[in-house]
Image (cartoon, rainbow, N blue to C red; front, side):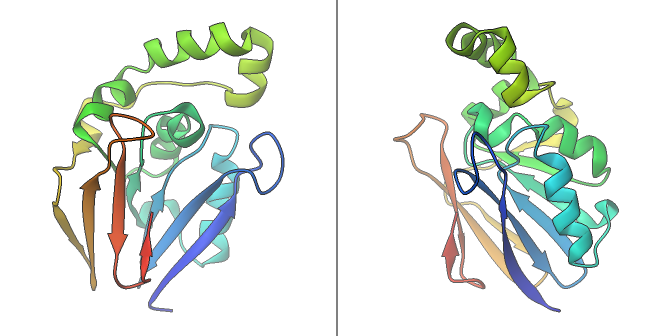
Length: 169
């Protein structure tokens, strides 16, 4: 298999509510949005279904640092030792130190619901986070992923244009 995109239902709140994406490029992989630590086993199951191992994951990309998109980043990187986390420059700090996001979400949900939804939320080591500039192109195998800063849903939001799949994440 050369290049593909797999949509992964993360079962956040209920089925078909949130998704992550597995991009396959020959024998390499990348995830777009990492959901929560509770979803990481689903991400890894889909990786295995593609015949790939966690060591073959090059990137974990987050579109923004909100917990339903990024809380599983540390757990995913722990499972994928060669992966680099790619994010908007303003999101990078929240991914390295998610304490403000966690405190805010705990106020909204309460501790019990927060723990059920997110499990453990840990920061990502700074040396495994790469901030992507607006318009920056990442050449990855035969793909060219273009990172676009798309302020709106969050001030630290980005989209990833993938002409190979004719997709934008």
